[in-house]
Image (cartoon, rainbow, N blue to C red; front, side, top):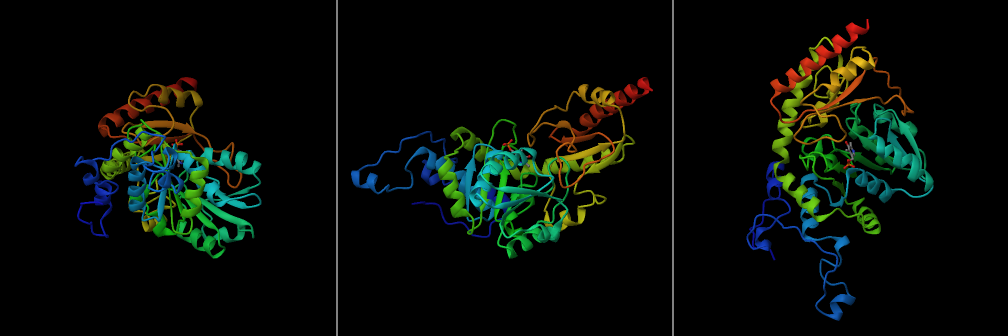
Length: 398
Ligand SMILES: *Cc1c(COP(=O)(O)O)cnc(C)c1O
């Protein structure tokens, strides 16, 4: 039993991040729960083994290390329970598999994280689940798309790369009246900036690879669920035995303790950069929900407590060569997938080739930025030089 005095129930998020999921009295006084490695768990007697007595029975079913992160995430999200996954995408697939079966219908926003879409169009289709993609801005209009066999409505706010802001409470209300489960990929905001289960979400997904890690050094996923959906989620997790490695879970716990600080700093840095881009003559549009001019800003302001370090911009028309000249010469922005680490990143993207419910016609090249923890003046100088290369390349071609 814990020798720690019991904590008040109404702790703030920052206190939860520091205290949740650890009990030094259980660890000889050491602050952190260590990495438990293991497959076999020994039982002291035949009777204990036959009755699977004790919290731990086998490595895939949980260890004190995985329990620590699950408990902390459950506390942070105010969920009934959490399961872990070895990546964010694995968390998406676990969530979907926990509430769908052959013959069911699924609604997914057209702006969904693309590998999730590929899972729906491939694996789920093969197993007899039909997916319809919908306009992410549909709001309460989702009702018109619900069929008698629609069992789940997937959401993600804002949309991956394109940043459409979804009205989650409106969608959840209509979906729930129909009896459908509402799933949300909450990776962008994290529970710190969007409390999913308080906004009507039944199952919330987080790619721990991003802000939980904060270091671009691990892959992890978390799926939290309310009372209604947690039992099936736990069963699905057990069936797949898709458990993350203990070191990654430990690193996730380490990241958890400082996540609020890092996220606030990413928010501040990204907002500064978003305003800077908005004032640039080369930029046609900045897709950042916290900008007052952004179409989804009112929803963001109503439902979110902050914005993270990821946003996109649309450039005024320029050639492919000019874009490459800009990006290839950047010294401080890395080009690559994923985000949420300490370092700034940029990728060009184009959603037009695979959308089915909406059209993506931005009128210029689209770039997604992750703003890291560098000095902003340095980042701006790097981009200034990039824009100069872009203009020079286009002038030469003219
Ligand atoms: C990165 C990401 C994922 C997947 O996370 P991985 O750990 O890279 O598999 C899922 N959803 C969103 C919105 C993401 O950005």
